[in-house]
Image (cartoon, rainbow, N blue to C red):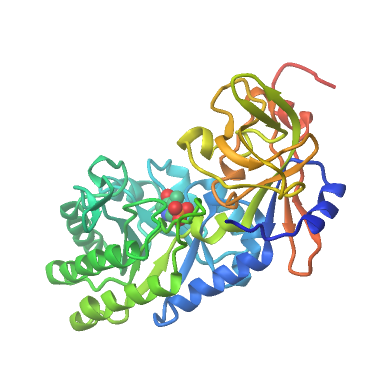
Amino acid sequence: MKTPFISAKELETITDTYPTPFHLYDEKGIREKARAVNKAFAWNKGFKEYFAVKATPTPAILKILQEENCGVDCATEVELLMSHKLGFTDIMFSSNDTPAREFQYAKKIGATINLDAYEHIAFLKEVAGLPDTISLRYNPGGVFALGTDIMDNPNESKFGMTKEQLLKGIQELKAQGVKHFGVHSFLASNTVTNDYYPELARQLFELAVEIQEKTGVAIDFVNLSGGIGVNYLPSQEANDIAVIGEGVHRAFDDVLVPAGLGEVKIFTELGRFMLAPHGLLVTKVLHRKQTYRTYIGVDASAVNLMRPAMYDAYHHITNMSNPNGKLETVDVVGSLCENNDKFAKQRELPEARVGDILVIHDTGAHGFSMGYQYNGRLRSAEILYQEDGTARLIRRAEIPEDYFATIEGFDFD
Ligand SMILES: *Cc1c(COP(=O)(O)O)cnc(C)c1O
């Protein structure tokens, strides 16, 4: 079972004030998660979590993470701009297919550039000049497996550079005056296992030793990127970040320390793991419909949470108003004119009556941020459930004027 972070009664005080649908975030849970991550890697002096902004690009959330000593990982100029305005100084820029002006801006605000491609070395030098510190993104090719479990196919991934390119790149950058180097790799997404980071870390640590042997460069930092997942399914066991941190520690002691690289800093760029469980999409039942199936029509749709439509992803649903209702098998659907606009298919849920409040779990990352405006459905509000139990609006819902604001040549006043 999954228990929402807020009681039905407390949620009612919020839905009395703010119309559904909205995303609700749990400040306490976010802070505890950030502290757990920092604690799991406290053995490493230079450890830093650079939160992946794309997961939840909401200033009030980023501020909480900043207070918990996190930096940010950005992929675009707008994410950089927001992070810079929020006063972040630890900024990673892990972009790909990057426009010139975004490299220029990243360099200007002092972000650490994480180069996706060997070819970008010459491009960066030409458009922005080379910084003192640079990171390179590694793609080992082949398949990434944990034991017999194939996790992903790096050979099909557009990201990163080959080992040959990486070694050559470091030699060239060093010759051109770059002083500090890092390596980065992201080989599997949403892993629900405590073994992913330790295995990735071991491979990157071995790469760091090889870099030292072949180029004489002592790597400054190893960036394990994102990819630690969450238990969207109630039957899955949640990752244990303390166990993961210890696994990375063991690989560090086995590989880096004997090579004289015990000063290497560990960085992470977690998005999903930091935020997903600490967000709920709150929605109200508008209609029941009976044809060949029973449909529960809610006021949220795929524009508020795209993962079920896009990846057929499971998100747990709790009926806050009727938790002990008679079980029935239903499809929970939004209003978009697309049949993939379903939050649940043939799911057994307590009877959902018109007006009931449902919460869709684990929407704190890659939820609001993947939103869009198909069918003229507008982006919802975001609300922070604060540690003191009060609710704060941190982003208002869009209104039709927002939708029309970019249109040229027509007047909708
Ligand atoms: C998306 C992304 C992340 C975050 O991934 P999660 O799976 O949300 O942890 C981190 N780094 C980079 C470069 C990414 O593209």
